[in-house]
Image (cartoon, rainbow, N blue to C red):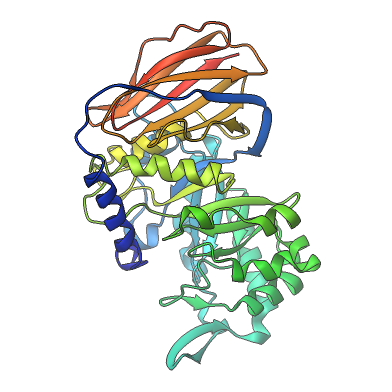
Length: 420
């Protein structure tokens, strides 16, 4: 199914390729403006990074693949979030248990999303001249109980869900169940409060605000929502900020619960420098969107962070520059987000460390000056992924006072771990 999702992604790929074509073949080293890291300017708490496991559609992760996904040692992704499927048929719920249990044993959070209610709760209606599915209006309470039953089943089998969603992509439901903004609002106001887990809503396919605005503007519905979930298929950078959530979402979490980027082309996961776009996409999600979590679509797929043979892909290594080092509970702090054209910087603090992720998309290496403000630092280690390296450790950097220089190779992503 994912291979045919979101036709607007093709246009985004064109933009990406055009930008690569017109960068030019320059090889000169350049010096960028300072990248200032402000330890006192705290932003969002990070819950983690992860992906979807969907045994019903593509088979379960194997035991070794679970270790690759959720372990945080060498040649492992360090994922700290697992998203699973709420099958409409409860006889299939057992498929989700093994990987979820292992993820939790590694310290990951597990969330769940449904595509359809049980068939007995669904009716067909005419949507713009075509037949479509929706939840029957007299079955809202029964559907809430269905979600509760899944929460209970998983708990009884050793999996305490962190949260459960009301519906996957209710506004892009060509092959599953549609919900209008008014229907989502009614469920959130009248039924979501009975669910015995944190509730995620509305998981719009493109972070369309028309389906979440009504929840934010309704005090009762907002009380029953714990996490505003969004997908970013085709979402532009300018659409990432959400002023209404900042205004009314105090105490709520903001998660990006599904995406692949920039495409789902077969065997595309190792394309370079295309894969560098993954770390840039995460950067914008964290810095412009203030998301607390970033969740890829399938963990194991030919276009995913783990290839079909269980090996980490170039896209996966780009994710790992965040997931292995920016651990749950870390806090994003202000950093000069683009000290030079095609250079992007974000920073996070936790465990007496500062983690800095620096992306250099240009064809020229950059000598970057980093300044850590409002605190002292003692040592900086680094890891680099480029066209010829995957999370390759570099030599420790010399720190003078609270600042250091570092070389960012052309078309690369570098993670710095700075001890405080």
